[in-house]
Length: 354
Image (tube, rainbow, N blue to C red; front, side, top):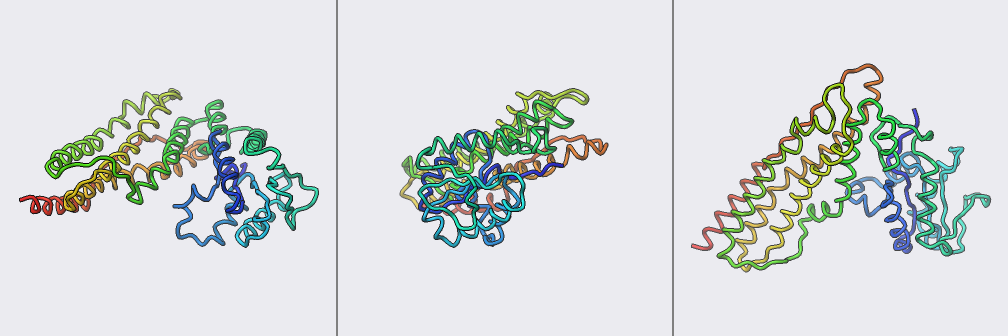
């Protein structure tokens, strides 16, 4: 079976060249490709032993490594570690893997002088991004341009999946659409995880009770109504009745609705945290209520990646003759800890306004 990569490209660069690289990465990602870029991976990198983690990225998990060469790049120890991993893979692989881009006249030791570079100064951000997209388009992830047996990792693989429609394709497309949607909100998720918000509206203490009641009703309604997103009727209309094919547009729409609920919880928590008030007790109550979103957000997020692990095995299991009957089900609940925290904050608030 052809090798499956987590990333279409991994970029290796010096911090001084980040602005150029970041703009290139944005264009490549906009084309639907998966890019390993350090700032997108802050949570994944958190707590990892980077001297072990980075070599795996460059040696095993990426289709190509794009190396942005400059005098800064040549001088840094971390980029030297990345470069060594890239060269290990490049020496072992008969087809091109390392794609070097020169940002100045620097050349790298250990890289054969016959390796072709692109001139970043001459081509600029748009030219380099276009070249990467063309390289990826000309080099399908599966090595053959055919369905590779797994959940798609980019738009080209998704198009191949929909074009070929192997057994179980509906669930693989749904998984791809979920992951794509969740990862498009990664910045918002990081803000949520940090508890970050900007004060946007001042409220008087007399308004706090009404706002808390209103916001509590919203989050409870969102939690209860989520079951409609994965109702049996909706799943059958998307995935098809037994023995019948699914509907591409319905599958994508169902995934979009799932992701929209995930985003609603984060927006709701942001709104609560953004209220400004003179009362510490009122502010604590608002923030305590925002924790109601924790368990639903964690459950929605974890399900997406758990489901991809399952979906990645479906094609091989079906080929082996296994009969798979899959019904998606998630129950969203408010954690008892969040409820207790809010109740405690409300008692303090009531005492403060007596």
